[in-house]
Length: 195
Length: 195
DNA sequence: AATATAAAAGCACGAACGTTCGTATTCAAA
DNA sequence: TTTGAATACGAACGTTCGTGCTTTTATATT
Image 1 (cartoon, rainbow over the protein chains, first blue to last red):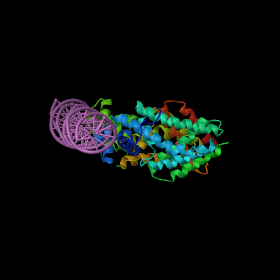
Image 2: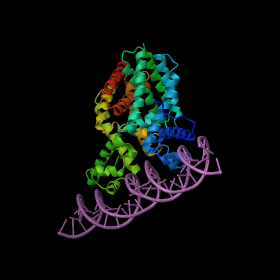
Image 3: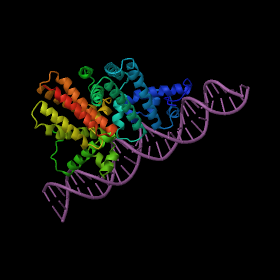
Image 4: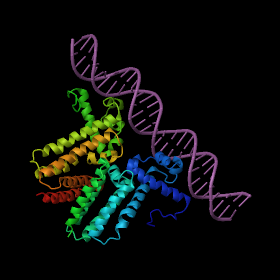
């Protein structure tokens, strides 16, 4: 029962629900999860507010489902593609590089960068879901830094996380893609630190 | 007439305006600059919506004035205290340490962390003001990294910026102050890199 | 003390929000 | 062919938002 939605997939309802969530992730990367309004989302998908609303029952449930869909995208575009690389340094390199590519899948930059700061002071299940996703990623980074033989994997994971998140933040604010050159230079220095 | 507010300071209106903006910066660190509503702000300060509104004339002007007040706080709590340290490595150390302390001056973590990601996809003067403030800080970091003798001051400034911003982001999301230990360890490693 | 001006309040508006409700359409099972 | 659930729609609700108008209170100057 750990499945993302425990549905058979294929029914019409499930297809529209998936389409809604895919668009919701994109929209939330631009407007945030509060700025993600049901009317706007319905308009984008050319359906009625009430028809869309029926799929979730409340805005909070829509937000929770959107966080789940964002996590699915992260797994599919970052963790899963990197999983073919061996544990340790190669995996760390692969995850960082796939993350930078994954940023282009959003119209508004990284979903997590937009929503984590939005919800960090809003206690509740949405905040918890966001925090759990990011904690899981951080834990994976620590695991791989450890496998790479780092003496202080926590610090190393923190630095790698900091660099890629700052790449997203600076890129969104300046519009300058050379930000990624800075990020790659920083990642190269981190890579050189590995034993 | 280019002064920040072109006012004599001391009149009652100016005093309340300053009080409003001080509270607005705090509130925006929690709710963001859009979530910062005029009614909520007025309620906190025990004054009427219309009385508060008169000081600014539009919500956008309130947001712009709030960004200005946040910049003033950053200068007063980070740049100015660090300015007594010599250029280069000591100044970089002082700025980073003062920044970590400055985070505690907000109820919701760093104002810039909350607002930059909120406005990075909202073109307009508010976004421009936020970007200008952060660009100025980045430029100062580059200047000091250069003065410290780094071969690639841009990359170094980017890394330092990334570490302190990630410290704020992770701290807000996890509530764990040990995040600052990780950040300080990362800063120490950056410091050790200086020639 | 009288008066002019600045500051704050009171009140109301139009728009947008999440949400509810009743109804129409579709489609597979009987 | 009839039934019933699934899916979608349109209209309306109560609330909150930013904002504009009018009036009252406070401050400062003569």
